[in-house]
Length: 175
Image 1 (spheres, rainbow, N blue to C red):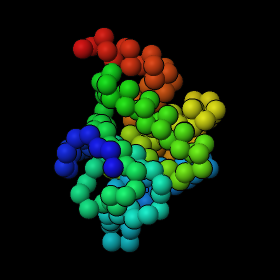
Image 2 (cartoon, helix red, strand yellow):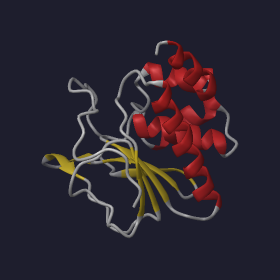
Image 3 (tube, one colour):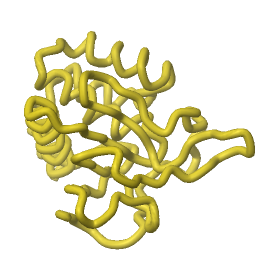
């Protein structure tokens, strides 16, 4: 397991308005899934715990006890559900390439964050772009297959529309 950061991170928006989807994860392309650490069930918010459903897990939020098991390849990058630094945009790019390479190799890949609506959708959309989809089509696909509320963080849509390399350079100007 490859990890950066430690423990439970406070990277989600405390004032989020969007509830998590009912599904723990959704397939946005062949072998490529987007999901979260929580879902809405009959009793309200429920935890989503990974077992051995995927060959590669890319996490942008982390909560102890939510898997995957230690023998499943897992990468973690701390990322807020808000403005990203140049280094965090580079992590989005890196994760999108990892996801696309895994999909091309026939590996089941999950990109996840807290609810699977913004951070994981950003990486998932960029992975779809890496796999040949245009940006508008990738955004539409995420919203059709994960949730119409996906990518409601307008800044993340702007990163995609600008292009992540340009967005990373522009974010670096603030440093």
